[in-house]
Length: 223
Ligand code: SAH
Image (cartoon, rainbow, N blue to C red; front, side, top):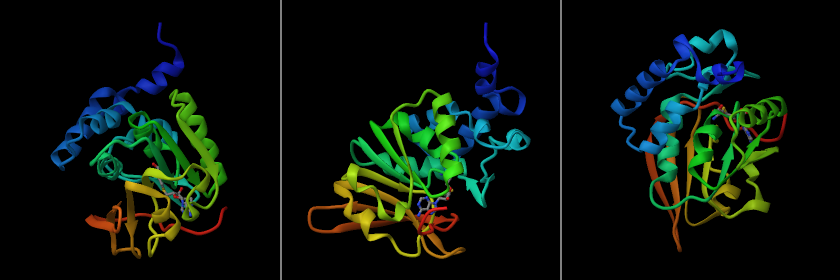
């Protein structure tokens, strides 16, 4: 017999499997092709990451408020960033900057060996921890801190994913990438941000612009 917790994760009505399938189809139509990523979008119950009152909108392809002036990322963007991170070789050790509610973390974690995630707003981090525990995701290390400094103790990273936009890319993040590693980051002021992928090569840093995006700003310090 299904218990209440199972029903909460499975969803009903506007949070049901059929609603999620529609979201996945929409992301396919927009050019997301990585099947593992699409599968995660289908299986991660996005409704448990937002306020209950917003649950019926959880599978719309839109950012939604999560408190503290922050938002849960739009599913298309989560899928695009994850796909861009996984493209081009194995990714074991990942750094995520800007845990937020933990939705992006939950999409990513089962596709890699380890995720190290940093969030500057403590209450968001504790809530994210609880959600991931509820989903049985165990390969994530959490830190309350300033992600612009990276996480030296666990560097170098095969991949770094930044969920908030700096005006210029923090040096520490580029330094903590291993050769062949990829940094996916939205860069620029509000209204003019571009999603960029940096790939560390032996002698240089490769830079590809993936397209325009809208993120909250990456801030220094902790809250
Ligand atoms: N991807 C997340 C949403 C991230 S919103 C999700 O799926 O929910 C961006 C997050 O980055 C916010 O929670 C914000 O507090 C955090 N953030 C901004 N600057 C930061 C910094 N310097 N270090 C760590 N986190 C930061």
